Image (cartoon, rainbow, N blue to C red):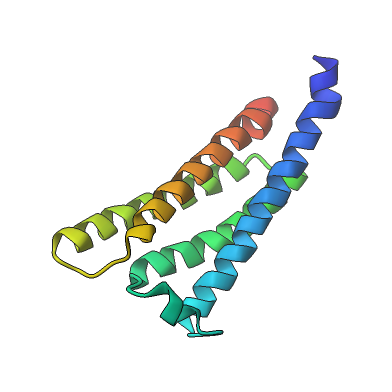
Length: 136
């Protein structure tokens, strides 16, 4: 238990912070590039769905706050990642409705959304068990 407490837990928190910060920065770069048509990325994305991009944009900021939460061991980290997962799930439901109503979309959007939801939930669970549950 002492080894886990002194070595493994702090390393997992730092690695999580670095990973989620990278995801957040990449998300913010890509979403702002699509929304504001920077670097020709909008044309590359094809039939993007604006509300999905806006949801990802919001989650990019949440990921950066979560990275800070992992580093500072804040118990709200799991909650904001849960909020991010909820935003993504709602956007995914909206995407599903958009597709069923005959809207144009890219198939890669579905897999990207599923991947993002999964990663967000994994980090929310990790934050819960390494930070929140530990501080209770």
